[in-house]
Amino acid sequence: MRCCPAVVLLGVCLANSLTAEQTSSTTARDKAAALGAQLAVRVRAQTTPLRIDSVNEYVAGLGRRLATEIPTAPPQWHFTVVKQPGNWAHEPLGFPGGHVFVPAALIVSAKNEAEFAAMLARSMIQAASPAFAHWNGATIPLLFVRTDLGTGGPFVVPVGLRTTEQEREIQTDAVAARTISSAGFDASVLLAYLEREQPEHPGPSHAERAAISARLAHLRETLATLTVAGDIRLSSSAFALVQGQVRGKGGPREAA
View 1 (cartoon, rainbow, N blue to C red):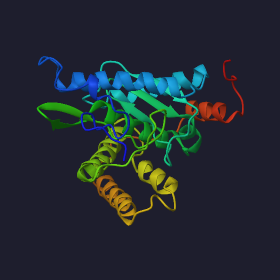
View 2: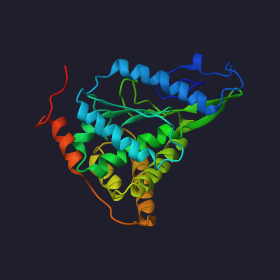
View 3: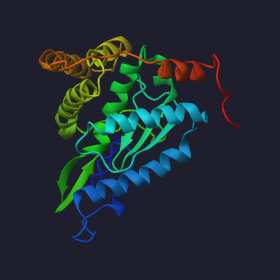
View 4: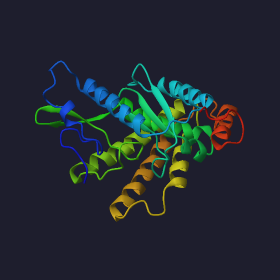
């Protein structure tokens, strides 16, 4: 198991930078943002960015639109599209402080803009609302790394935190569904994407398979409670354009 008691990143141990030794004026969110900035540097050093300006501009624009629907959103966001595929869902990796790394494979895998927006919103929500725990008198950010985008993850979740992680995934799905619905997208696509992309063998244990099933069941319940206001949409010509560029079917080539 790879974890760190002072910063349960399920990933990268940065205990010496985020402990009770910090001044009392440092808030929990300050700690989380500081950790997010350090991790973002690490991920940038270990991933390969996709250098197509129009793709990066599109992702940043969509991210800014979604951010208006997230009450706890930081004032600034930093979106980076990377070539690493990440996990089975090509899930973007979001860190506190507004640092989001988006696998180009997600743009390709999404059937429409709504699916892409839903997965992007999930990572933004986790970045905007990090979980916390208490350790030796300090408030510690908990960052559950579920994908490998330069962090060395994914990582085994300590038994004592598995319930916390599962509840956080369920909560994030629910908030993401409401967020994209408010942004004018069809929220049901989040369930459709996760059901379609989940691996036949999500893990070696029955417990992990059961956790995924429970997560999808909760998402179905959330979707049943949503009230759709006004017109909803699935996609746009802008998404189709950038998807074609990532696939290499036209438009500007990647910058050298």
